[in-house]
Image (cartoon, rainbow, N blue to C red; front, side, top):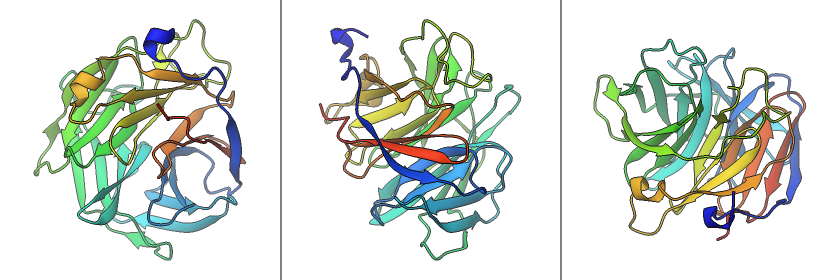
Amino acid sequence: MGPSAGAGAAEPAFEPLATVSDVELPELSGLAASRRWPGIYWGHNDSGDGPRLFAFNRRGEVIARVEVEGAEAIDWEDIALYERDGRSWLAIADTGDNFGFRDTATVYLLPEPALDASRVKPLRRLDFRYPDGPRDAEGLAVDAEGGSILVVEKGAPQVGFYRLPLDAGPGVQTAERLATLQLPVPAKQPLAAPLSAPRGRVSVTAMDLSRDGLRLAMISYSRLFCFDRRPGEGWAEALVRPPRSWPLPKLGGLEAMAIEPDGRSVVVAPEGVPTPVLRARRILDP
């Protein structure tokens, strides 16, 4: 991407933050940085596990395992932390659909658990469908101030970006296709990408929104992207502009990403055990 696309530094400094070696967390697919407890991260496995969350610290120690009561885990792909009414909440995206057969996808909204909790009950289960047929989505963010849940498609020639009302009522909702993202398609598939990745397409595997709601970051298997929103601007306007972009470390299957509470630093991690967790400080600075 050239200067007109706001490209970031050629080689951002991603440094080791932690190594998670817990055998119960072999496929870290979603990541959220706690604001309630600095230095604590919430994560979950990809498909194949039950509905449970893990909290780990910067030493890589899993310090909490929390079952999400009454939830299903068909294909959990991302987790987002947001604040509302003076409380901290989590949104879990059960939105994976590798073969395009799911009629509906689900987002669970729940209070951020205490670190000594073993169970948590969702506030709400939000079932939804896409207006243009089934989609495989691995990126979720919550714009609490705007009252929106944001979902991004994983792999397509043109990446679909969708919005759901955070306060949606009962029944199956229909997401609004808000934008079509123009992300650079790799000239060749990154060596770090798994065999299941769509060939010759952008594979967006995680997304997060900064605390001030102005920086929307997402990753593929090889790059970090950031869309910048101006104060008072809507997402439809902000997403028309090309994102800033940086190369990511060459790690196999980068599936998890979170923006730190400072709103400028980014944490990324691949699947696998042990799991290296890396951080780039202040990478999102303008």
